[in-house]
Length: 355
Image 1 (cartoon, rainbow, N blue to C red):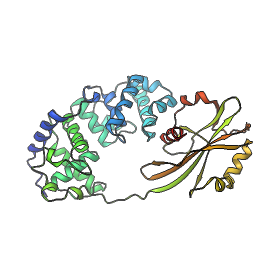
Image 2: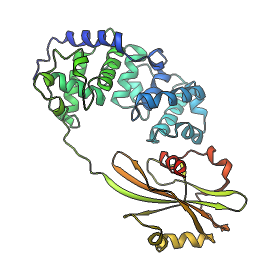
Image 3: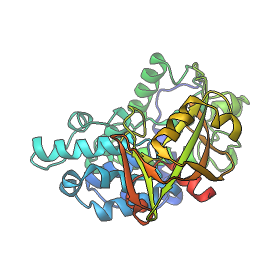
Image 4: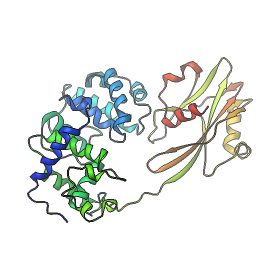
């Protein structure tokens, strides 16, 4: 393992590389903690290329913390639609209201205050503090774990308590006290574009002369994770029920999951894949027929696969005709032209495209 003392070389090399190769992004060109915060939350589970247009659209509609706090949650979710992990949007909204109601509309100006906001963890608080206020807090995300573990030859699992503490301490030792924001962003860019999980571009890395993993042929072995999450398969059958008058039925999700508050269609879940005949024989389908008179399936999409972190969803959309409807409390009858006004999960977007 490489000696981690006297590491000024690390920051010097990383910052010099960033000055020439860093990506030009709007949240790097501002000291507005609100806009930096929005970017951080969007990028928590989203790559920059996908997140950038969402950031621009979101901050145009909600340019200040006050504008976000005063917005309706349904509208916030609509502007978040397609990014997934919708708890991020709900936490943003709640935190904006906290700032306006408890902090007189002023964003916190230190790490502790930022960390107290709903949905803001160690990494996010550290990066906002460094970027907005030039405070020397190291932001350790997946990209940074990868760079540090490879350069310094650290095989402590990054998802262990010991590993998180070790990497946090190393980050605190390494961070530039004069350019902490640029230091954090440099490491993120380095991990995202050069020191990638697979097929790392070691010949382009400014740290290759000091990298333990490169010198010891362990690039593919680091970083180490100790936990492997079992992925669960689920089968969803959605029913787009069309009614007289060019109406349709949608439902608002009330289950306490990542899609709570979003809209989709009446749905049947199965533990196994079902063909149309098997689906029609299920008790759930019989109950659907009791609520929707004359229910007739007119079209069925091919199965769409949708990957979540711990689940693989296989979904099918069945377009149906019905003459009448007995709606449940979380269902709505709307004109089909109104459908675009409602926030829907990415999976439903995929199914609509499949139609």
